[in-house]
Image 1 (cartoon, rainbow, N blue to C red):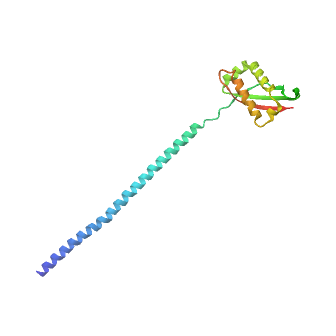
Image 2 (cartoon, rainbow, N blue to C red):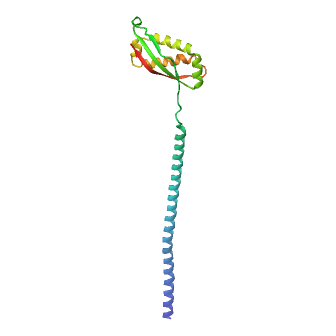
Length: 172
């Protein structure tokens, strides 16, 4: 009987050992599963972040490319040179100006051709009212440009003059 009891004790110990081994085996498997799930979550989040980033940068590039359109060539209207006496020194100083005007579109150019005598007259009035010191002071030429644009735009109905360019400006 002692042998039988011994065998039973060994069987019980084996069963207990088996029970103890089973949780030990479950622990590494559980750890592996937890690590695998965590890795999948991290990889998924990284992929989602990368897709979001690259799709946003693609939209930004599209917006930048669509916002920057090819430069439109300016429509320039030329007018014959002006030679006028300035208002100071009893007309001893004179001004020679050659200019071109940038207009909003071609229809303005056609209208300005029809209004050329009226526009030239107004430019002559403006230039002869200026003195040497007004034109030579800081910002004098820019003020003259702005005054010309304002005056001449009052006559134009189909568009506008956007800028005046002096290609020659000589005071003697």
